[in-house]
Image 1: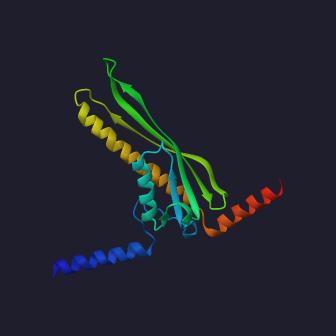
Image 2: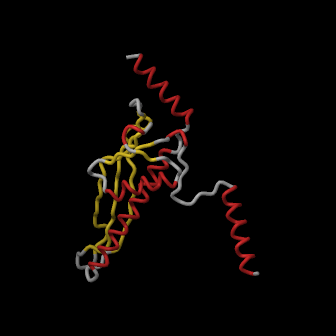
Image 3: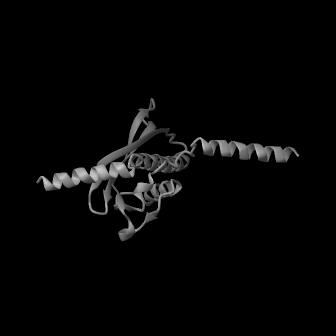
Length: 182
């Protein structure tokens, strides 16, 4: 009987959270107007980051397609990762590093109207370095890189959230008027 009560309580909690608009972190609301969407990553973008963006889009119920089927293209370019020493030991060895990643994105309609012009997003984290545990610290750095990929992916998705159909139509009209005014 207590197990049945627990299940009922969990179902009730789930229904309440769904009803109030709660979403899991990373499942950002992407407007239906941006469907279908293709993601194009240039050679500088790590495949893991590109896959993280696509995964975030799918979690947000976006249809991710390839090539000509897409109404919109999300372009991810100019990925940069920088690491710098942020603290040193008394012996002059690195004790802490800052890791920063930057990514540029743009969103373009099928008819080449830019909804988002070249925009940079970035994420940074620090980690301690211990020269006696180099292998463990390298694993920690790789895990930190993956965490930063997820952070960048969430920022990309966040940039897409304002584009409902009304906003897209307004941008198209301004673009059309600008082209006719030339």
